[in-house]
Length: 340
Image 1 (cartoon, rainbow, N blue to C red):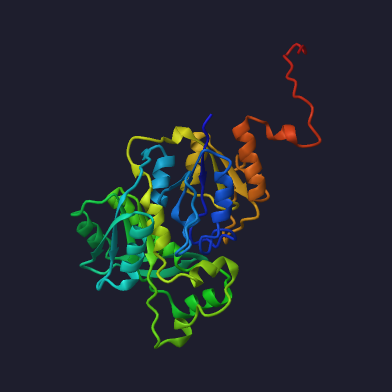
Image 2: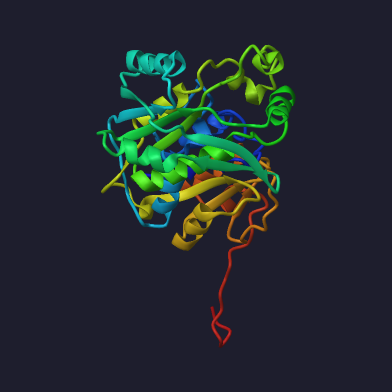
């Protein structure tokens, strides 16, 4: 019997695992090895120029994933997508080189489009979580709507307060300031286009600010290391969108067996799973900056190793209680007359 799972690490909430730069890749690969297909969203596997998603993973943008779990759309698997890559003027080598590299190595069908109006993205924080403001996205949608493509990659800078960006990269602590506004932009544009969308930032630091320009010339906190060894930050998005499922007739929410999530966060995907009777496995080791009260229906596990064991038991049709000790007595229900 085929098993389909969901693996999420919500963006901008400082998840210990997956809240930095593709550092949820190993955990996602572990869970993917326990099921036939695993749906992930870009934040799970995007690590700048690194994306270690496996062949049995589906790369699905967050708003599309929400609608899928709510039963509003289905996902259509594809062999490949034609990807349109958009960037603010002027188009630079920082965009052309990774697109050329993806064409030469992945075999990606991609074109680059210079935006007529800049996409302006500003990273901010709200109650400790990363979010942001996005301007110019309506102009972007209007312009790209004239082109033939299956998925959209956006390559543009993000305005982040200098001290916030330096503090994050120098310490490796706290919430990644870029993730929240990237998720916001992707959601707005994916909803409008009804197509897969993902964003990658452009490094716009210059030698005029030596502290920022040379910020990556140091030994990095391991979870941030993918950012430090990347040049253009776009390759992970191009790999993900290459085979991202489209919206169309195909996989439905009725086929989903489970979702794995960090502990302490409850949003649209979680509530949709509970509404559909899908098991939600919450990993206690993966803490975030949130402290939400979780529904009692959530299945709590200590770490992703335990989550993998639970998923494997589900796939094998084995009751998890049967492999634990002490084994509890069999429940016996009696009728009103006292008989069995």
